[in-house]
Image 1: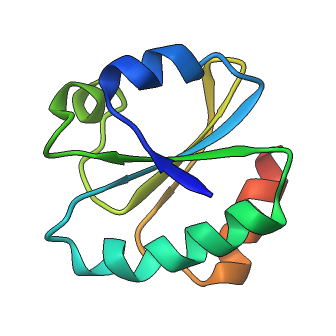
Image 2: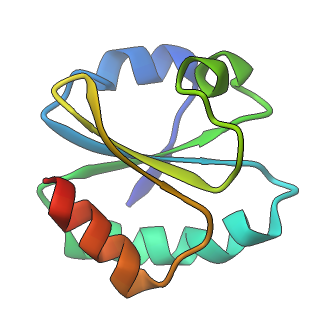
Length: 102
């Protein structure tokens, strides 16, 4: 399951072992297309926690992680950015990105 979180919740989970953060916005068509892919992957890859952050509701996080385009998926390992995938990609490509980082 992909959990939608805000800045304060993100501060509590960002140092977890392995997390995937999907930065998106309600108005973003490609973000809406990526959402079901992320849900499927969150069910398949159980050793990673999946989160969604709305850039309009949390502009501070978008700035902190230099999110210029969405959708943007960031892999965070032990509090540090371990990889980033920008734009809409296939499920196989996203799975390969996530498995490659972790």
